[in-house]
Image 1 (spheres, protein in one colour):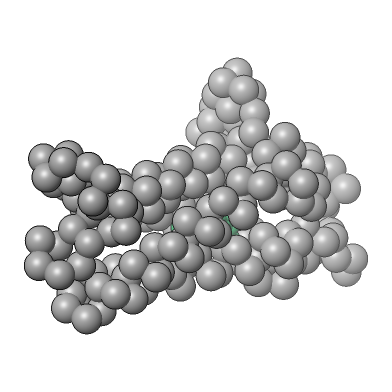
Image 2 (spheres, helix red, strand yellow):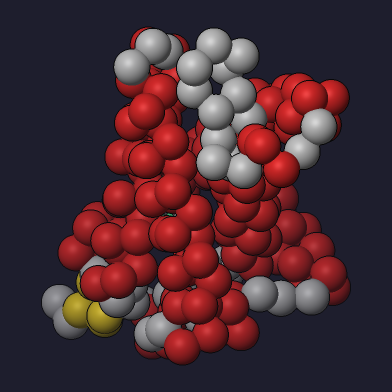
Length: 193
Ligand code: HEM
């Protein structure tokens, strides 16, 4: 069976490093104490990954580019309706709904990372920019940093559930291509970009 190269190496490295780092951020925030020093480092790494992905969305491989997978409201609603009617066309890259989920994930990660720069545990760990804002603003940004994590986890839950749904209902394995870069070409000739 022919294979089609869909996810370039930087996109795959970005994805799995992000997954590992988000897991580490959760763990290090739960463990607290000295682990918060590493939590700060993990936060910088996530922000760097997000900046990289935003740039890669303009200069990266075909399917990594925002222009390739971001669709307007009309086509996204058409796709959602087709999905409900079990008639959604397959896509080689991200489908229109998946594309907007990626925007939501990247925006939430940006908010999570930037609020972390101003957050504090009120004991000994402070984000590097904490001194730039008042105590009141610092507390508000710390609350936002904590609340944002719940939003991120909700998005991740929907993200993973939709990948499981693809496997169960459309018999499409999306995880392997995100590991290897390749999709089987089977009926792919008819797939949308
Ligand atoms: C912290 C958890 C996660 C985050 C923040 C996350 C974030 C993302 C992002 C931003 C993308 C877009 C990739 C790109 O174009 O650069 C993506 C795609 C993808 N993710 Fe995740 N992800 C997470 C967990 C997972 C897990 C656990 C799996 C495996 C079960 C997974 C499987 C995939 C797959 C298969 C795609 C490609 C979807 C497609 O074919 O359109 N993700 N993820």
